[in-house]
Length: 478
Image (cartoon, rainbow, N blue to C red):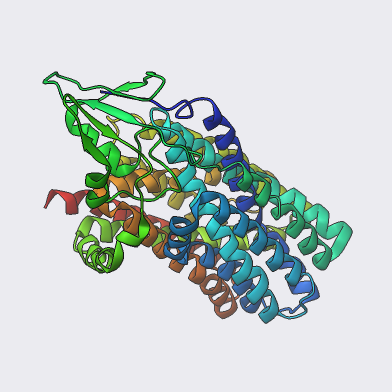
């Protein structure tokens, strides 16, 4: 069996990949800027670290907690419209934040509105790369994820420069204008099919491999007979994608026409109105079925502990390094070092996941354990600018590759039909950690008066996250 589409793994797919990388870059730029801007918030808005930390935590948390909602929106309107909405929301949120003079105002605008825009953008990136790439899918996910690393790389020095020249209000306004370029990337996310009907033919002869061709009789991959239905259900047969809708068994039956020797399929069969109440009831049962799997539950706990540590360590890093003697510009440069390591980590992790001999959860366990050790002992070597740079490079290298592993691990832990719901809940559990991390770290600092304890807390959370990842393997064996 052969599958054909001129835009799968080639042609326009590369345009989409560049656009997805740029979209993820803008998400990373906004996601990793609250730590640097927190210093300006303390100076210009309110000198209370616990209160100002809520701005960044709500921004991080909204971006992940509302993942299931973003998936639902994208399912209804498609990737292009979702990316346009994301650009509009981040622009409105950041522009409104530039006029705010209270922490509450920043939480509502910068935190909630912009955070939801980022959430929509992240969901788009996670879908379009999978639609346009088949053979090179793992690498494509790694490249898209590296866009977030580049955002981290640029966030520190860029935000520091803007704050120095335009203060907090001007910085928020300029960032809003930059994030509005999400709409430009969104325009490129066209459906693989532009309303025309592309017919596919499956030979029904008794051969080891059947053949699928389009009108041009071109082909790409040979697949087994069993794989035909799987590809159709997942929307991966070239030309079957429209607006990233999922194909149900009932719809597949509706598109098959029997001939003398062949089965013809047309991609213009999808009618979302026919799914009806049945699909919504099924979604409820899917949730219960997913969380009956102890391995997936342990993985979600691992994700929560990871983001709890990640948000606490990254958000408080600029203020912490300044207390250790670094200047504000040097503190921002530590983010650049972290971003450099992040880009490498995300791409390498994507390459590693393409090797079937290496279990995904083993990679996760190793990255989390090493990250935990790096953070746990950071207070012992954080007293000079050079060692802070070493921390930035090491932490970025070992912690950020975890972002690339989320998709492959979810696919590995749950049934294919449950992946959309499971993926949304994986992001939901991340959101819990992102929201709680910075305030808990601030609360520890306020009670103890020792900032080192916040990094001991973050490092311990990473070690516990690694242990939870190890428990995933144990749960699968029972």
